[in-house]
Amino acid sequence: MGHAIARCFAQEGAIVVTLDLNFQAAQEMVAGLDGRSIARSLNVADGATLAAVVDEVVATFGRLDVLVNNAGIGSVDAFAEIPYETWARVINVNLNGAFIAPVRLCAPCKRPAWAAPSSTWPARRRRVATARHITVHEKPR
Image (cartoon, rainbow, N blue to C red; front, side):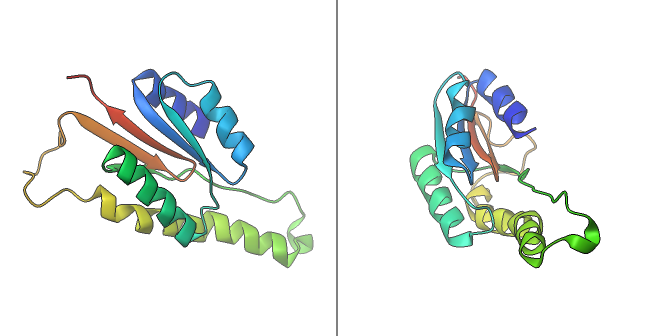
């Protein structure tokens, strides 16, 4: 699903930043995208690393407007046989990561006080950030 989201934004001219625990997977995802793209390794449950990546993206592209948080993992173990380490990893990514990503990304997404409330704000730029992808979409002038 994340690849399809990134591909759609790239086809519309977006700058796509893919974030994945597996750096090679992140690189492979941007390899097939048109336009500018960046790949980074990231554990979505690691707030400090996520903050550093957000800072890098904001410094490079200006600001983030939208979060699409689609990272998630599961286990194929029978419920009674799930090792605690597996359970903790699933909870860490699926719950903690789903909480940490929006919290870390909220500050760059805030509309400046001078901007008038509008469903079309900002008029020229739309940025999308996901736990696996941070996408900056600049509409043509």
